[in-house]
Amino acid sequence: MLASRAWDPYPYILRNLFLSMLAGLKGAILLIAAKRQDAIAAVMAQHDFDTKVEAKAEIEQLMAINGRQLQGLAELQTLTRTGQPDASTREGT
Image (cartoon, rainbow, N blue to C red; front, side):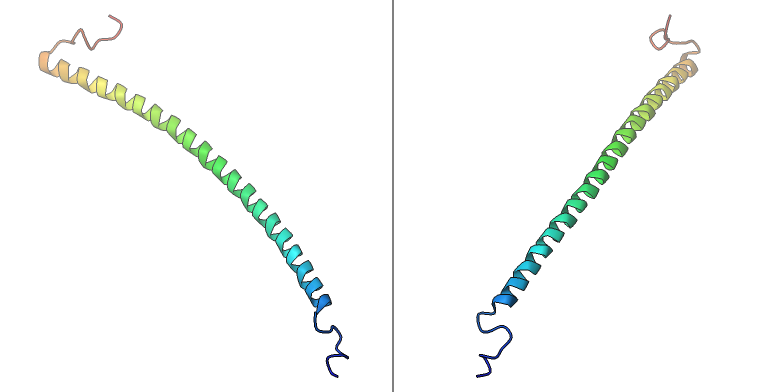
């Protein structure tokens, strides 16, 4: 007799409806949070890419400077060995 006076009898329809509604809301909230995380990850990835492009340009610039310094050192070594500039290392003549 206790089961017949229960608030939500055996099949628990109201409880199942409430839990299904709660699961649906949680799913929507999780999707919104995942979308937000994806947006944040995309912004961070773009920032990383921009930083790497800038670093590559700086490295290329430093390599060019280093190349010019090595060429200058080679010219100085030639001058100290021979006492005269080497025609192959001179630019513009």
